[in-house]
Length: 198
Image 1 (tube, rainbow, N blue to C red):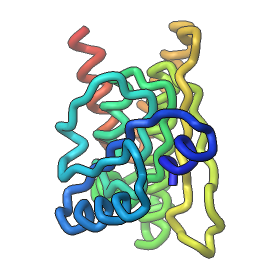
Image 2 (cartoon, rainbow, N blue to C red):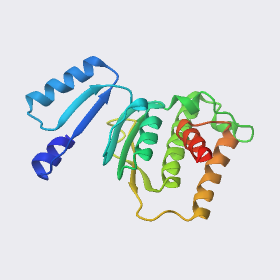
Image 3 (cartoon, rainbow, N blue to C red):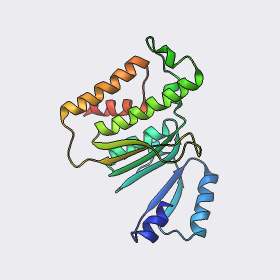
């Protein structure tokens, strides 16, 4: 676990909070942490969309379903965290609305539409992170045989702000994708609303 690595291997103090909506999951995780005597590791029942805290250095998500990943990433951006590691899951939002006139070959088969939607969702998320000042990568973190949900969005806060023209280029690419496939994506929508209100 991250706690064991940071505390026992790297000899660093760490305060790690695990969040889940299911009480039984939190109860099980708390018992395991107590049995293993993990210091600084706590679990809470809660929704990442409305979770608040101070001095967060890193946000890690593992299979936060559908738009829960977006809310976690949005909070991480607003908290100005230095490191984000997110393994998305169940990207239903885009799949429920994706449609295209010129590229309908990509959406006529359900399984292909689902996979294209997941890839588009994570592409948008990664690019939003770039737009917001992170160096972002998408990579496989386990073998496909272990889990088909094996993409990791890894982002590290940049020291220097991106030039305005690069930010506009990223935004234009996202807009083009959204327009072509008639989609809206939660993280991008929340960032757009925030940008308009500044």
